[in-house]
Image 1 (cartoon, rainbow, N blue to C red):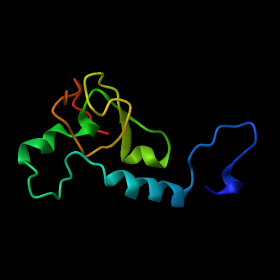
Image 2 (image 1 turned 45 degrees about the horizontal axis):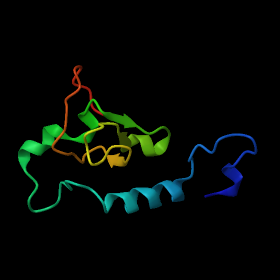
Image 3 (image 1 turned 60 degrees about the horizontal axis):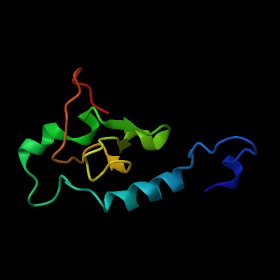
Length: 99
């Protein structure tokens, strides 16, 4: 974390490229359904976290690819999830939006 990004008395926004890139690489290691894995099924493509009504995008730069699962029944509830990951409890958004 860059010390020059921290403002006393204000919340740190996470606006630090090196920190965000490190998080992205570390978090990718715990995906449930990596699209490059041999067993990835085509029918999972339309059931990715970014299109789930229980996925809430993070703010800032990390929010372009990452959000938090808020489905109480999911094993991923309360965890940062890559928008292209997914799980068996996917629930499509009524408006069909993604990300």
